[in-house]
Image 1 (cartoon, one colour):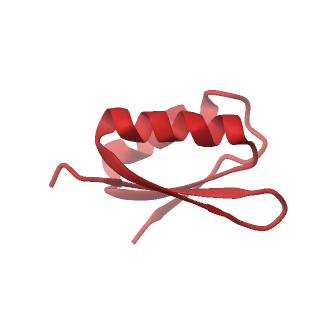
Image 2 (cartoon, rainbow, N blue to C red):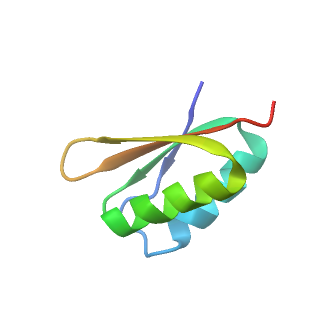
Image 3 (cartoon, rainbow, N blue to C red):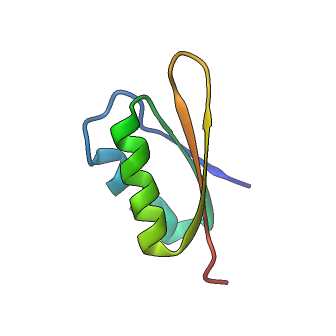
Length: 72
């Protein structure tokens, strides 16, 4: 099951910090963000941490960034 992190409206960098902390505890997370800069930053974080990253566009210009650790 995915852990949901609502990071909509938060400034640049904050969703990345939230995602990194969540991935320390959970294997799978979904981060909700509302701008492309945060999407790109989360993709970079996922790559750095060795995660699978998938992105889908939701309602009201919201993006859902699915991240799954591959360390197991």
